[in-house]
Length: 134
Image 1 (cartoon, rainbow, N blue to C red):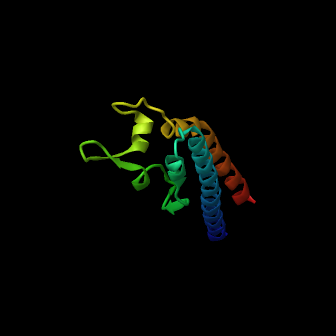
Image 2: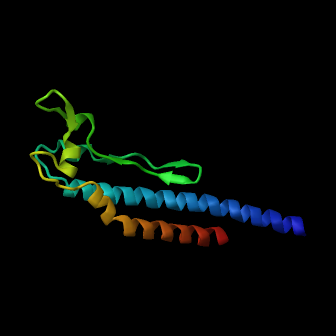
Image 3: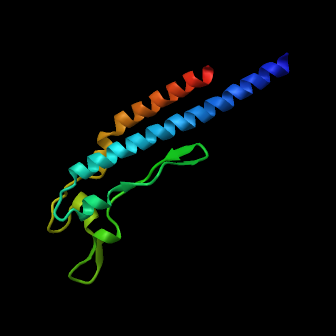
């Protein structure tokens, strides 16, 4: 009888882990999409190139880590300065430069979604726990 109980509990725990991973991955994906949308709305638009570089990676799971990486800029927004050096005008837009005031769009948008993202993940974990308990 004791072994059967342990086996059932082990099965419930495995189910809980699967459900949590699935629910949290869905939550991370939705949160990442909200952040990207907010960033695209907040970025100043001249040609639209910088806005079009804002994107996220698919949600990945590596052990206990579930993540999606959001990026902006890169090779499409890299320019040469008067001295021949390279700079990413996405970084200059976010933080400012010698001749340009900062126009934050990237980190400010992520911070603005932080509470909602945290709440979304917590709700996902609760849903997973309820589902695993069935």
